[in-house]
Structure formats: C-alpha cells, structure tokens
Length: 603
Image (cartoon, rainbow, N blue to C red; front, side, top):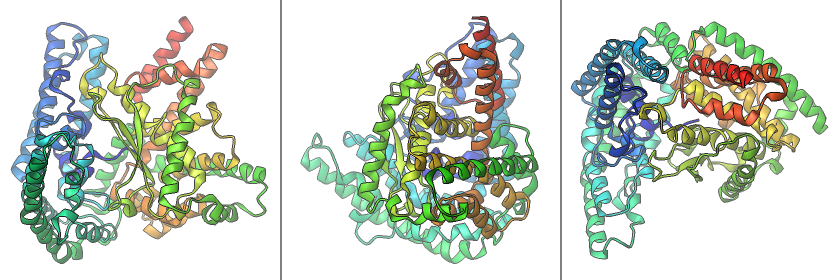
C-alpha cells in the first residue's frame, strides 16, 4: 500500500476532492518541472504549456505534497482549506479540462497522445468527483489534522531555515484546524459524515496532541535532533520559538478541536457503514469502483471475480497444508498460523531487525527478473507509534524525485505477537522491492516524459504491480519455505477477499461483522489485522478493489506474452516493459504491452 500523501500531511480527502489527484500536483525542483516536448508543433507546445501551468498550480495549492516530493519552496505553510479556496481549485480543474479539450489530440505525436490521454483521464475524474463533496469528510481513522506532524518525516531539517519553516507551520495550525472544523460542520449540515465506528478511533489520536510540556508534543520531535552545524545559541533560540508556538498555537487549537470532535461531531456521525448510504451514494460507489480499478467493471462483476479467486486460492492453500503435513482442516491450519508462538517475534526490535534482514535477502535476487534496477535506494522504518494501532501492516512512502530522499518501507511493530513471520516475504516484495519501490523509482527515472507522469499514481497499476511482485518471489527462488508460500497465498487471498467484502459492505448490505467473519474464514491473517483492514475498506470505499484487478491484468498480459513468444519470452524484458510507461490506467498499460509483444515477435 502507498501511504496516502494527503492523509499523512493532515489534509486528507478535502484536497483530493478539490484539486487534481495529489501525485499530479507533486513537485520536484524548479529546474525539473518543465515538460519534455515530444514534438515541437503548436499543439505540442500548447499541451506542454498546460502541463507546466497545472504542475505549478498544484504545487502552490498543495504545499504538503510539494514537500513530499522534495520541493521545499512552500515548507512554511499548509494548504488553504477555506471554502473559497476549495471552490477556486474546483473551478480551475474545470478550466484546465476545457483547455485540454481545445488541443487537437490527432495532431499530436504518439508520445504526446499518451500523455494527453493520461492527463485527460485524471482531469475528467477530478471534475466528475466534485459533485460528491468528499471535502466534507476531511479526516479518517488513518489520518487527518490529528496526525499533521507526520509530514515532518519527509522534511530535510538540514539548517536553521528548515526549522524556521517548521515553526511557521506550527504557527499555522490554528488556521488549519479552524478551516478543517469548518469543512466538518458543512458535512454535518449536509448529512455527509464518516461512519461512527471509524470515528471512534480518532479521539485517542487527538489526545496525543494534548500535552502539558511542549517538548513532549509530536510536533517538537525535529527539535530533539538538530544538527551540530547550527550554532548552539541558535539551536536554543529555535527550540524556544518552537516551544512557544506549540504552547500558544498548537495545543490550544487541538484542545478546541478535541471539544468540537467529541461533543459536536462524533455523536452525530452516521451509524451505517455503506458508501451507498451517503448522499448520492450508489452513484458515488459506482464512480469509485471505476476510479480505482480504471475499468468499467460493475460492483456485481467485481464481487463475482472475488468469489472465483477466493475458491481458487483456497484450493492452493489446501495443497500447502498437506505438504506441511498439518493434521487438521484448513480452518485449524489458519488458527495454527495465527497463534503458534514460534511463528512470531517476541519484541518490536526483533521484528524490525527481521524486516531489515528480509530486504537484504531479496536485493541480490532482483537481477533474475529485471534488467533495469532503479538508482534510488530505499530503507526500512517503523510506522510511527501514534498511528500504528489504527493502520495497516506496512506501507511504502516514495522518495523525492530529485534524489534527495530515499524511498521508505514502513513496517508496523505494534503488537509483534500479531505480526507473523510467514507474511514477511510477500509483504516485503509488495511494499519494497520489486514492488512499490521499483514502480515509483522507475517512474521517477523516466526522464523523457512529463513530470506529472513520472510521479503519477493509478491505484490499479501501482497496487496491481505490488501484488504481481509478490509472485515474482517464485521466479527469484525466495519461496523455498512452505510457510512463506502459505504467506504468499494468504496475501493473494487477502486481496481476493477484498473484492468480496468491499462490494459486499458498500453495495450489498453486508455488516461490518459479516465482512470480518468472511475475512477470518478465508484467511490466516490475525483478527487485529483483519479488523483494521475492514475498517480501512469502510473508510476508503473502492480503493481495495484495485489490487487484485490490477494483478489479474498484469498476469494476463504475462501469460499472453509467454504463449505468443514461446522460447523467445524474456521475463526480465517483460517486467521492464510493464514499468516503462510509469503509472497509467490499465487500458493504457494493456495497449502498450500488446504493442510490446507484437514488437518482440517482429524482432
């Protein structure tokens, strides 16, 4: 899973609904933002001028995303979440789409037509989703203004100016909180609120901000590790300024928000969980299914695909159970996998060390399945303690486009007794290499395409690649342990179950408990993980559908290439070709790979 940049930066759905998808608006450095002309014609120049203008607009409008991408020009501010600013961004998106449509696509080169199509796909859906008013639900149990300090993880903090920028952001917290509260009140008035079962997780996150000592605030953490290059007197002055900002701005703002959330908001959030229960909910869920899968599949079709995949994977799990020689049925084997102490580490420290060792084991095997290895390195980090209980097993955070920050594989160390060893190989292949790190790093290194494509992110492509990457462990010889193979099947099952429970809860009337029970009946994942996953699907309708749909498409293309090319099929070349477009809709990927197969046959 890719860490949602806006959730992490405390802006959440509000900005995603008010502007283009966050990755489109990411910024690297001023020298890297100009689009590369594929053809120096009037139409091409107009197209790339639009790309550049929209890039710059997005950077201005989302300082948090710019920070994540390594552009630090706006590190001293938060996004403007006033209603006026949100409506202006929506109007600007509509205007950008009109400008794009005014460009004659047929007069463009093949490369420019691809960029045109990807940009149009994103803009059209940004405009279409405006009517669903997602900005009225600007936080979730997985992040929002209550975890705004999380953006500090990607800020440089190299010199005094970096710390001054952070202090400015601290001083801006009251406005951010006030504007977010205003959006939430709009949601209350419209009957557009998140499910209460999710919002009941948020008070504890707000509580973590209500400290008596400013130095214990999560926002103060950067000042506990200041570089020696800043003179001692200046360090002390900056620390004092930060403490003052936290004491006088941050803590009072969160106290006010705590009162609002617990007394005014939480009691009247909706008791139902289904997306169809929101305003215009059926149309909204249909939109989300198409948005995340980049297909025209219906919820019913996705549900049936899920049921078929669950049955297939259960049969393979039975084979592994028999190979291991476990005396009991599959349900008993699942319970063994969840509870046998030998299958777990006994401390967070041991678990982190094992994750780091797992990554080192994978790295040298990558040359078996790729010709091109990304230049950008990656690291392994723990998920921050304040969000670990309420989030997923792991996630990936992309590096900066200009190479100043590596990618990071974040792992959940909360309750190591529910983090089994058998899941670690598949998880690492998905979240780190050759999964999300390869997908993002290769995209960023595509120097001959516009920047919005280099940093773009389509869930079906990105998560489909991550799930496909789990199976590459077989090609790399990494699943020699049957328990690791069971882990791969468990993770494949996890994504198949998603198709069933997401559509079940949001379009077929399933209860939260019904979804949890179905998940537990078909997967060895622990109840802690399953509960967090189900709550994630409730709070993020449709997103989880993209993984399996994307994996099935990439696997289908590989099978077709193997059949058509026969002995000439080169897995390393195939995998490189899948990553060579950057993140694109599945129909675009399929067209590209069909052309690649045809080209290989001619060659």
